[in-house]
View 1 (cartoon, rainbow over the protein chains, first blue to last red):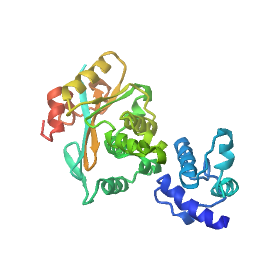
View 2 (cartoon, helix red, strand yellow):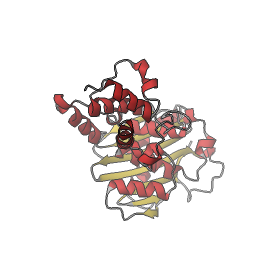
View 3 (cartoon, rainbow over the protein chains, first blue to last red):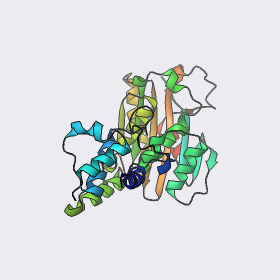
View 4 (cartoon, one colour):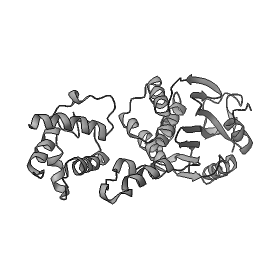
Length: 87
Length: 217
């Protein structure tokens, strides 16, 4: 089930962040989204990811210190959604 | 002290002019496609370009084309390079987009990447970040290009020794309409490879307006 969510998230992230020239398959679910070897995301992108979780999954992130852990990779976002989405 | 326009460019009607000559033309059917085609034609590798609004894309792309082959960013410290632009529609397109995203309180999801473009000065910021330009900057919102205002403002910056070089001009974008006219202003005595006035244009109101209108000097 998490595999399906990762597949969906990869496409949503590319669309939401307008990442040009990158296909969902090219996004390594376990690779860091920020910094070296990542997707080169910036602070505005983090905010977009917060909006994405709220809009698409009804999850509000209120504690900013959780951010680095939640948004480390596509997989960590998927795990956070799985653990926090209302049933 | 004579001020000279040492290079100028225009982007409109799916064409790029540099120093009055057409350098690139596109058959793109939309503004988005035109910008994509142009950025690829000039081999500009800058992923953030694709996230910008059209106003920033226009100003950014125009600056890339304007600066190609010049040495001004090596010649002058970033603190001494100014960016002074004018436009008519400000950031209206993204202002409206942002308003749409917050109109319905039941679907209140304002996009940070839209909101960040709801100020026209962001086009200067995109240029400044790319080229590490840290000098004076301003964006004037006017009904139409005002060569007199830009001449007097830029001249004053040089007179007060605040800048050694200025990127100036017009960058207007709203919907399907886009038009840019950018130029570089430098002091005559700072141009080491001065080749004579036939190569450069004396910076004044009349010449600036003629270049904007595509007329010869």
